[in-house]
Structures are given as C-alpha cells and as structure tokens.
Length: 173
Picture 1 (cartoon, rainbow, N blue to C red):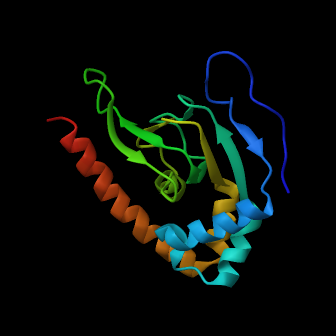
Picture 2: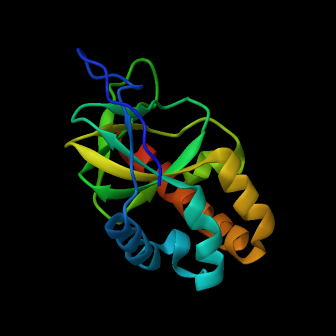
C-alpha cells in the first residue's frame, strides 16, 4: 500500500496532486481497467502482475494541470475517475484549443515516454480526478523486461502520434 500527505492550499497548480493509497478495491478496478485499455490489453496476467507494483494512484483537483505541452514526459496515466481536458497550442499567435476530453479507462502520456521528447499537449483536470500513474523509470523497466508489452506500446504510440498530428492540424482551421 502507498500513502502520502495532502495537497497545499490556494491556487491549484502542478504539485497540488495527492499520492493516494491503493486499496484492494482500487487494485481490482485497475486490473479491470487495464484489460479494457489497449495499452495493457495484450498483456498476459503474468505481465500485468509485473507492472501492478509500479503503478501509483494520485488524486487531482478540478482545474489542476497534470502537465504542460512541451514538458519532458515523466509518466503515463490511466484515468480511474474524473474527466481530463486535452489542450494543444500550435504557435504563440494561436490560442490554446481543447481537442479532446478523456474519461475513465482512457490513458495518456505514453508517447513522450517512448520518444523521450516533449509532451504534445497540456492536460488539465476538467473535474476532480484520480489517476493511475506509471512513472518513466518504472515504465522503462517494464518495457525492457516485457518485449511484447514494448511492441504493443510502440504500435499504440504510432497511432496516437498520427491522431495528435491530425488534431493539431484540424485545430488551425
């Protein structure tokens, strides 16, 4: 089980996130979500069991930024509860546009972990949210020790990269 302190007071910013305890109910929900999320669906139960100890549960407030477009990727996320807004800014002269809303069972953040590049979008909590989080170092460990998982992640990232480009291009019209 994992536990840590509470969020700070005042304006909601990155860092107000709370580390939460993962109980048996949460773990059971994670396993069910993981089987529905294409990021984990191709894994065997044994492969999934290797990943579970590395996954954290974090709570975020409405309006809290999880990460900003351009930040270096440090984790991927699965939405347990809440709604997440995906925002993209193409240039300084264009406004930031919301291009998607993500809901429980959706995931994000895997592209930056694979490419070791900057985040392609800003992610904001549209509602209070609880997210399962797999940090970059743990993610790399899992990829090295699970070639099937690594191959699946690369396929998903390639599809998402195409989708991201399409969304970015359509936000300029």
